[in-house]
Image 1 (cartoon, rainbow, N blue to C red):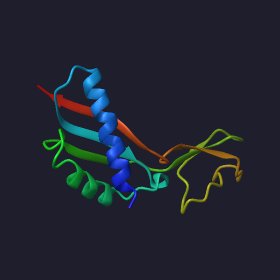
Image 2: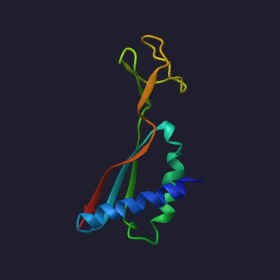
Image 3: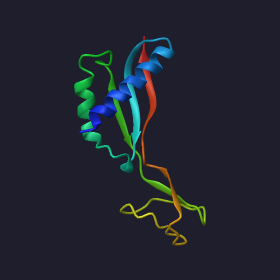
Image 4: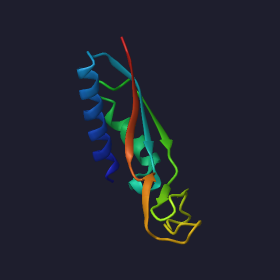
Length: 114
């Protein structure tokens, strides 16, 4: 399950952010996750619960906001939510589209206490 590797990387990034900001105790980590990220939010929460136990993140809470998949048509410039991962523009029928959101796991914020 690659969620463990993902959470390890997430905790490492958060530790760097906190250190660069002067330190403190991490209270909350907010991430957004889309359906094309290849991540199961439930497994990510379980991995976080296990990996935070013996770390500086023992008090931290992981909040995952599941983000919808959105694409934009390069032909007509309309934004749409692909249904069943079909990236055909519902406005003009083009398949020349780009993903705008829902394809990554991103840190949104880190809440640090004294």
